[in-house]
Image 1: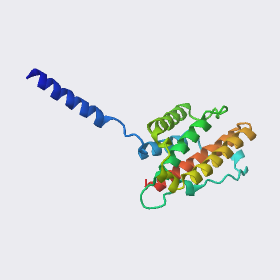
Image 2: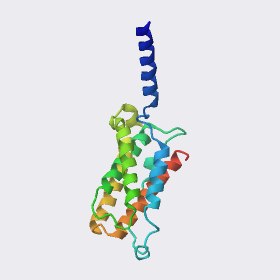
Image 3: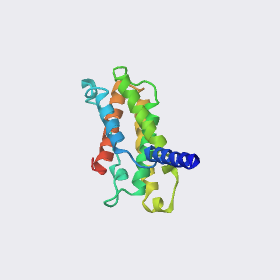
Image 4: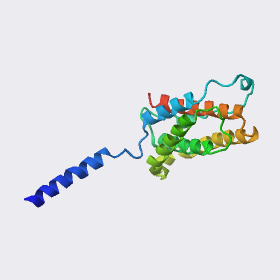
Length: 181
């Protein structure tokens, strides 16, 4: 009888543990919204001296948009790759000193959490190829390469970082709008 109770309790504890685990390979929109808010509030508006600079980097919004009413596999993978690219950008030197370091750290932690919890999106399936992920990936890779080049070209100046921050805000905003948040 004690053995049966022990098995029963163990089964319940196991079930409770499994149910409480984070959902893997599913975009957590609450975290996307939190990253947007942290990025938005880690610094004020673009400094006045940076307003005149034009950089001509255009976000390929189509790469983050679904082809139908439900989010397709290609978009899910594109969002995952977007978080990977964001994480890489923020690893660069020269982040402005006036940015709130606590908010920046929280932002980075959530980005890395989204990456680690969605690493399974790296697998390529036939469905993803049909959804045009290769074109999405190429467009987003090119976009983030331009942002990285901008930082390097402008020697990681405050104005360049502010432009990148506002571009990343646009990216997060598109993700949120496409997922009806």
